[in-house]
Length: 387
Length: 215
Image 1 (cartoon, chains in turn red, green):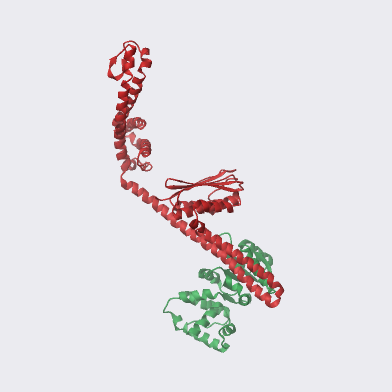
Image 2 (image 1 turned 45 degrees about the vertical axis):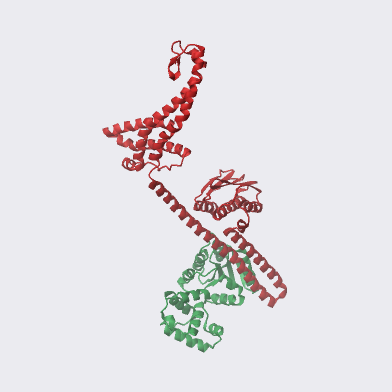
């Protein structure tokens, strides 16, 4: 009903613009008028999406009036607004009248005495009354209206919605084209994330682990020379070599854990996240509600996001407390990482947040960060779980 | 021998310094990045610099750039570049302006102390030290059907050692043959590859590397 009334207004506006077009000046108003139409149509789209299968919106109206008119969606919206402002409005009015009649007749005994005598017509059935029994007798008529309303309103709603569903949903080709563009972008992001991930692994192996092992080799070389020259000093050098070997092992473990945490294979995501929270130097609580398992890649990404976020918190936030919430709602895995630190986190400053965004978007997920200066910082990541 | 070490990994940096000092070499300064390295070169005017290729901030080729800059500031500075892996492009960049007093070795060679010290002294003394791995890559990636196919297996060995920067007697020692035999092999190699005979190991290395790169 609301959109039908708006549709009437827009129709009047469009009519005015069309008249102005005849005079020539209206051409300039065409894009604005179509944008108004698109706004109302989008309202109807979101209303219809709430009550049934979702309808994708066709995107913005081009600024040039020729291009705006050439959009197939614009033509269909014009047809729709014509229909919706007339028949649609009528269906709405009929529905409202029915409901109004129910209330009017039900309450008739309460207000009939206030009506001017002789004008106290008993509702829609047409008899007049000026006695109490007559007035009371009007009340049950509301049951009749109620029955009619229950019977007709769903049909009326469907009748009103049908043109919208047919004309506003755009042709299936547009939907698919938009989806293909979106998927192409996320696929490219996935490949980028993959390459960035390989680069990260290569770097941590070359600059971390390999350096440690070279150091072991260098120290062993030095120890052998020392052994030949002065055996007393050799032990000290050997101890350093052993330290370096232990460092190398720790680095290697960290690298492997960064690739695919083995804990995810053996335990659930909440367990794995609890492990991360326990290892985090900032006190961190985990609230998890994830029934069943998500695909391995989604869990690995969720784990990576939390690991990276907690590393950031430990390094930069000076937070006293952090909180990780992970919840599965429908076909999405929702993550929220909160800390009470000093805020001011920006994506450009380090590669950590950028990496989180890339990995999230590679999964067709959504990433949002709120970190005002002075804190607190909240990161929200939503990942589709397929299915 | 006054040495400056540029290496971002603290453990490896200290390990190398410890090793060289134990050999009675004079490590005058160590630096964790290119900027600190260039400052140390200005301050101490060392004879030899040992430089890691990948250093902060970008961990790509800071070491090469810094080494070239250090040689510009301090002509005659011997530079031994260490790399975590063989990147032939790095070697080419480094050797673009001649191969004298230059070395490019894999990091792990440092562990073989005697060989590392030999290479270090060779570079400090005006020679060249190219990692066997680099030479092997150059040899294997050369196109089939070129003149290298004319070499006998022994001549290939000699060519590889020449490319590493070894002098005649070092080659003879490595292959356990006489100096005279090495001389004969080298003459034959230069003839088969159509290279002009050069005197001096340094120019010889440059010629051989250029040849290998172009095939």
